[in-house]
Length: 218
Length: 217
View 1 (spheres, each protein chain N blue to C red):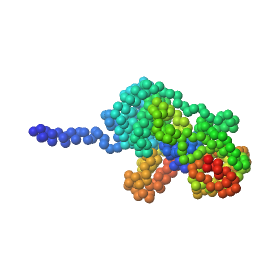
View 2: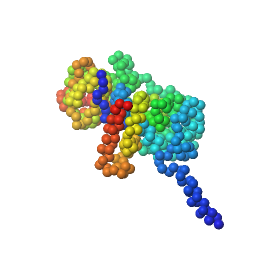
View 3: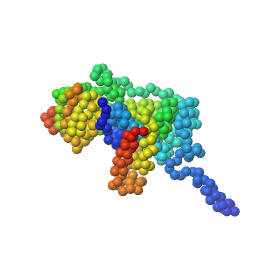
View 4: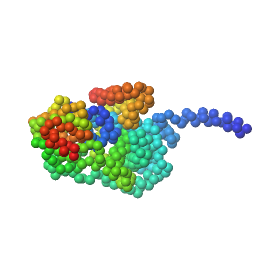
C-alpha cells in the first residue's frame, strides 16, 4: 500500500521538480528560487542605497561560489580562491555606491574586483614567500583601486557591447575558455569538439575578429 | 601624435584577466592607459570575463561564510589602504610620467653606456621579469642585441626607430628571440621608455659586453 503510493508519487514529483531546477549550466540564481533573470545591478543598487542585507546575501550566494570556481580554474588554491571570493564580496558591499550600471555590467564589475584581488594576492604571495598573517581580509587592499592597475576606465560602453554582441557564440566561448578560464588547449579541443591542431588558430581568429569589430566605427 | 604600435591581443587579454607578471603588467598597463583603442579591447575582455563568471561552475563556499563575512564587514571599518606614497617625484624630469609609473618606487638611475641610463623600478613581488626606465640621448644608436627571452617596451618620451618602424610616445614594442634589434633614437630629444625584460639579453657588440652585467642585475 505504502509502496504503491510511493511509486505513484515519485514519477509525479519528478515530473514537477525537473523542469524548475535548471540543472544545466548557465544557472542564474536558481538556488534561491529567484527568477532566472535576476537584475544583479538592482541588487547592487539596493546595497548601495540602504545596505540591503538580503540583496547582498543574494549577490553573495550567486557570485561567491562562482568567483571561487573561476579562481580555482585559473590555478588558485582552494584557500586563495575562497579568500578572493570573500574579499570580492566585501568590496562589493563597500563599493556598491561606485558601481555604475550604465557603464558596465554587474558581473564584469565584480570580475574586475576579483581580478584585482587575485593580482594583489599573487604579489603578496611572492613577497611573503607564502601566505602569511597579513593575508587577513581586513588587510585586503582596496580592490577597486589596485596599486597599479588603472585599466577599466569605461568610456566606449556601447561600442564595446556592440562588438561583443556581434562576436559569434563560438568565438566568445573560445576566448573565455582560453583566457578567462585559462584552460589548456587539449581541454578546449575536447570541450568544443574540434581537433587540437585548430585550437590555436580558432583563438587567434576570434581575437582578431574582436579587435576588428572594436575598430569599426559604431 | 598618434599611437601606431599596439601590444598583441594576447597580452591585452592577459592584462584584463590579471594573468601577466608584474613587470609586463606595468608596461602593457602604461600603453593601455594612453591608448583608447586598447582600452576598448581590455574592456571587451572584462565583459567576456563577466559572462564567464556568470556561467562559471560554482564551488562550495564554507558553511557560515556569509555570517562571518557580515561580522567582518561590521567590525573592520574600510581602511584607507592606498599604496604608500613612496615615489621619486623629486626628480623633476619624472613629474610628467604616467600615473601608474609615478606610483612606483624607482631605484637609482645609472649610466650604463654613453648617452644611456637606466633606472630600475622596484616591484613589490618577485616576477620573472625586471622593469626599468631606459633613457637615451637623441641620436643614440643602441647596441645590437638579441634576446633569449622577451622584451616589452612602451615609449614615454621621444622616439626610436628600427626595422619595425618608428616608435613614438605611447607606442608599444614587443621583442623576442627572433628579432634582432638595433634601434636608433630620434633626434628630437631624449628617448624615455619603460621596459619589462624577461630572460637575458645577448649583446653583440663592445658596449653590449660593457652593459651586460647591468642587464643581468
